[in-house]
Image (cartoon, rainbow, N blue to C red):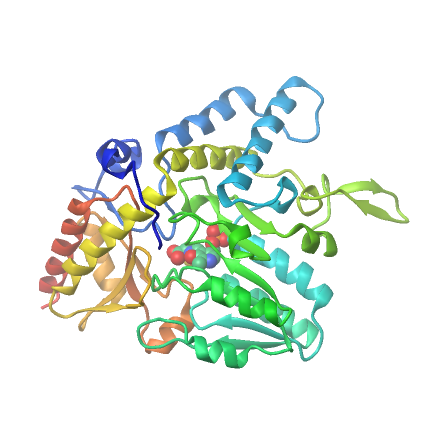
Length: 415
Ligand code: C6P
């Protein structure tokens, strides 16, 4: 990821930051925990946990419904998160920030609401070989219902998207381009600026799956000119069950609600229902209020460190880890793209990833094993899965050293 000139970087005490994550202070299987599964879910720092406790202890009430003080307090705290998200990703207005339950929910909202309304037979939806299932399956479902056709941008052996192929696939028939910003399985950072510009030249709408980018670098949705951008709170030091759909206002206004119920309506009669204004039109039912407030605290925490500093620290750790792991005989890194985020997928000669992951867990090392909800990536490499170390800014060089030691131990275990 690109990092700006960082004036504050040298003044940051990463140890103090790490100490704010209580989960990291424990032993697992008798060994100090090394948590390298941040791609699946990152950990919550004390200020986020404290904020959740404060809400549960003193502010719990439903939002947007009560005129009583507690409900207003909860609503204010919940809506403050919308303002924080708007600033965090530089959305044009609060109306463009839709609260969902996560990236999967956000993509389904666009696929079902936009897709079902505007796609017709013969239209094309472009995704890539390295999509997470959440950015494949909803589009397949909509393609089946509408007669639209799914096209796939191939990738090369290193995990770079083949951009010539993308430009060749893109045509007047392309209605939607739905692309992962950073691959969860390979770490590839995709050239989304180029993809968005080219797609817009053909009048296609672009959705970017930012689940693995927003937690790790500064994202400016207006500078990108993304039409839709999606991400999850639990991968950015926030709680589970909460996520964001950013959408351009004119597009969100053009599409129908995804789910019906309380809060998303203006007036309900048995003859006809009219809908609430943005953003509430897409937010039916009681939301995960605590999780939303928790995301606000997580954004404050990330902002205090600075997203450029976070990107810089993770790039340092990625470089350290790549060198360290590359030196281990019989270890193959899967995904060596030109631009990479702090994810290392790897294989050990002759050892199934699940077996290796089990031994590493005994050593207190948490890595993910399997297909990482990206089976087409595994099919491409003709492998059942990988081991994946996904690194966060609160990891350190000791964690990487422990990872390397555990890998060597695992290799010896299976000799
Ligand atoms: N990837 C991983 O271990 P949800 O579950 O809705 O918060 O996020 C889904 C999702 C969508 N896109 C990308 C790029 C993702 O990485 C994920 C979640 C986790 O890689 C769990 S499979």
